[in-house]
Length: 115
Image (cartoon, rainbow, N blue to C red; front, side, top):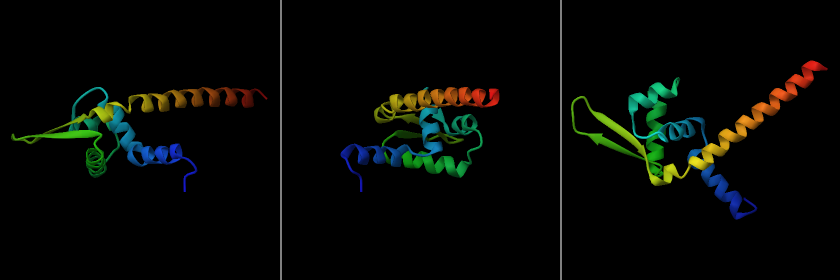
């Protein structure tokens, strides 16, 4: 049981975006609307099944919207909602933390190698 309201809110955020693919999908859509194929290509080794599943979950949570065009071949676009775009500072903070962590680890490794 969380000790504070902020603990439970942090947990809620993690449940919504707390895995590798969701964060990468959101980060990728920060540039604007993308088609399924574009996302799959840009995300690299994600499977079609995993991408589809994560897109559906993000849509259910109100993070992105899916627009289907009635044409042949079918066209589907994905765009972040306002709520999705509001995650930008969260993701930017994660990136900044990772950069700092990497720098610190590199410094530590150089010190160990020098000893």
